[in-house]
Length: 125
Image (tube, rainbow, N blue to C red; front, side, top):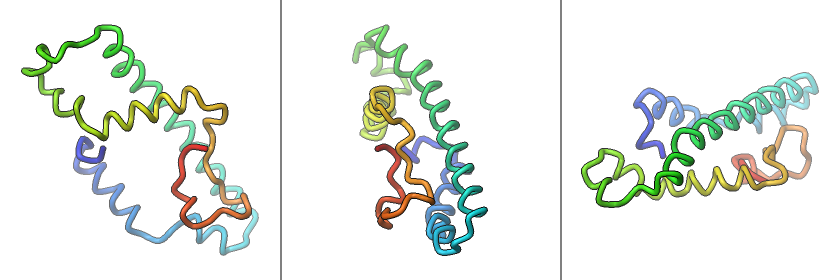
């Protein structure tokens, strides 16, 4: 999916991903106020991500399904590589999971005990 992002956005995500785990830092601090602030930030990101998925659904997923685009029409369209990409198919499956999930806020927050390091990147429940 990063291949379709603006270069500056992609660079930002790569920089953040290559740094240390903020979640682990917050957990290790044992500071309740820091934990609360971290959880507020994560909750705000959940809201932003949900809004982003709603916009993508409204302007990409729904129009594609309503118009049943034919491959012949797409061959000359610049969207063909994007529409055929595994990343976009993954994104559409993700959108469906979010809409169908009973708990779309399945993020692991800092105050949840027992989370393993591998789970810190989990987005959906």
